[in-house]
Length: 289
Image 1 (cartoon, rainbow, N blue to C red):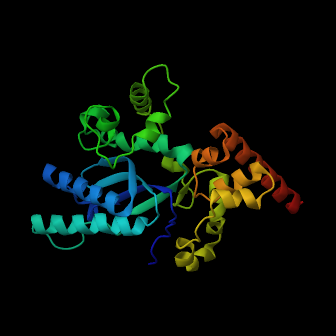
Image 2 (image 1 turned 60 degrees about the vertical axis):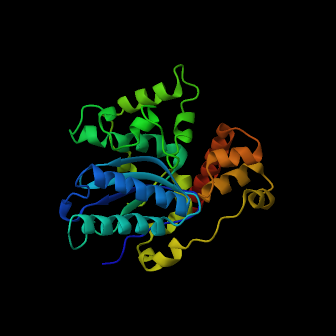
Image 3 (image 1 turned 180 degrees about the vertical axis):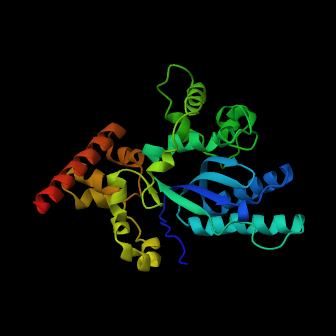
């Protein structure tokens, strides 16, 4: 059986899960959970990862992780490998602890990170383990809610900034947002090709995934070429809107990155991206007629 396709590039955001082999537990007690968190901290420092949300369940975990320099596979190999060795040694176990390799979905940050972060911390509530997310010690929720000092590797800034215009404090608005997600459907249902969660513009660079023959091209796709700089996009396109839209389509830059470089608002970037999508859709339809 071939390994699942994985896409890696600097600045990529992923929803990552790893499950115990045969649904067995991967955390036997609180000591195991704390050791896993220490290893996660090491991974973030060594590979320049930033965690936006996490949740430790009993037989699996969820991570929302941003790879600043790329290299998800190397970081995950370290996390799962070192932790597996620790658990097997401490509990005198043998064999594979995880059910194959981890599963990772590339996520469009501006469109889906908030919902996925909420989905991740609500896992214990949906599973019936606790009544409210703050009752579960082993997720990022208590840090986001200000109930405990936050570790340096957990990025609270981006998420809380999304609630900057709320009438209440960003923390209170975040907590309300999480509570409102208790009955919401999983955002992962919108995942395309089991790999990508995003709109048409975000999907664009990975359109080869529509072709079944791409399975043979897995290594080359995973080693996608380094993105151009924003200055290079600016030089390549006479139109600012085209430059911003093309840069965003590369998936190497967030709308915030592009807005700062071009000295415009995120809303302006969003409109430019939408216009570019409309033009490309119109061109495709014209070609089909």
